[in-house]
Image 1: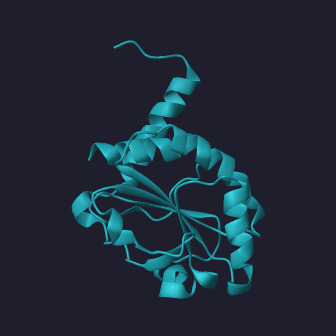
Image 2: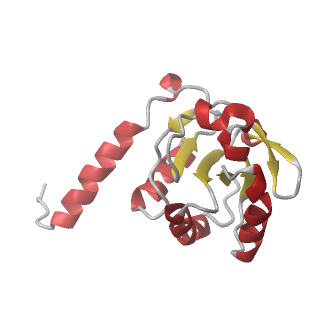
Length: 171
């Protein structure tokens, strides 16, 4: 077998090997804590509503600069999966009760698609505690069986996010 002298090929190969090791065997994955939160439309939405699909969860807030900086990348990532009904992009805002109008306004102003939910300060449904959210933005990947495949998933601005999603879709 001929060895590649291209360092980029070597780096990508190493990254793929490392990334694949992060996704635990399906049988070893913990069940993702379920939650039911209010959507931007005022409907109740549960994580379990999406069993059978890969769910990429983005925990964010309107006042978080790094969160907002990831949004254009998230849009591009979602565009790579247009037409694929096996992936759901879910955004859980941890804005406070007093910022709900700002949240709704920002989502509409920026044309943010996907499942838009609010967990007031992260306390509602104890989402922040149950997912160990101590900072945002924070990304979580849930597999088709409703299990946590990656509790600290890569940000949408990284190529690893797409790679991990594609691996989970193949399972």
